[in-house]
Image 1 (spheres, rainbow, N blue to C red):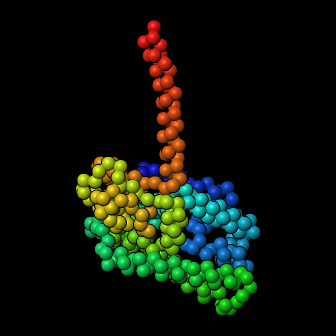
Image 2: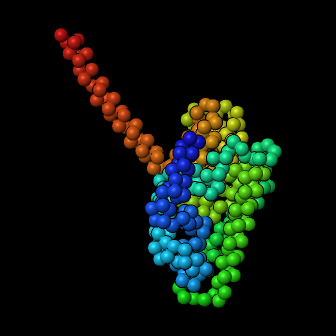
Amino acid sequence: MRKTNLIGFIISALIVHVVTPLLVTNYDLYFYAMPLPWTTTPLQLLNTNSPLYHSTITSWGSSGILSALTFFTAISLVVLIGTLLYGRRFQCSSICLFNGFAAEVFDPAIPLIGKRRRIKSKTIRFMNILRWVFLGIALFFIAYWAIYLLGITVTPNIDTITRIESYKYLLGELMLSLFFWIAFIGRAYCYYCPLGTVLSVFARIAGQKINTNNTKCIQCNKCNETCPMSIDIKDKAINGKIVQDIRCVGCGHCIDECPTINLSYSTRFTERIKYKKTRQNFNEQTSIDMPRKRTDDDSKSN
């Protein structure tokens, strides 16, 4: 599953950073590669009074604005549909070019300081609170720009709102997540990513889960040690219960590490595909065996 993660991130990086910018001659498309509520740049771009609109129209013209909005819409639809089919793994462990990409690609080097360690329960509780705080802040900025687009002026100075939102991104998301990558574990930002919080709801709708009853748990604790989101997988695996946790990004590290191949990742969609494939194989095998049986019966009668 880690190999699949890296393949997904490589393809995603090529599309977002190389191919699409060259095709549309707009090299700022990366800022539109994450759906709401992670960023409000598309809403700002729709506002002709926003600083982002003026800077974009100056640099890229009206075609640059159109390509950015089209790209954002396409990415949002891909992420939504992909999550409903494959769970949170689709975005967070396949195409996310922020924390997901950094965590997987630089995993062998993280942390740069000290040894890798699990986050303590108190820190996890704090991160759970921080998750909803960041989501609330993100929704506030979305509501502000949506209201402004409707022609309702909440505050006349939109430069101040833009500056505050930029500081939120630079300090609360970029700098803080970089610190976490170095000091703790690569997936620390995923604990409170506002987009990840929303996608976890869609992942629950998709039926995302880790199955723990494929063979038998030997309580080696490797699943817990390798999980970057500090989920207690072993406790569920001992009793063969499924793991459905809001923090799970579907990275598959626990599945790769399990020595008894006891764990597997699935959604309703993947289970349906697996069922159809198993049934098809069964039918094909049955069709092959039937002539043999008839031949054996004919031989006995002769």
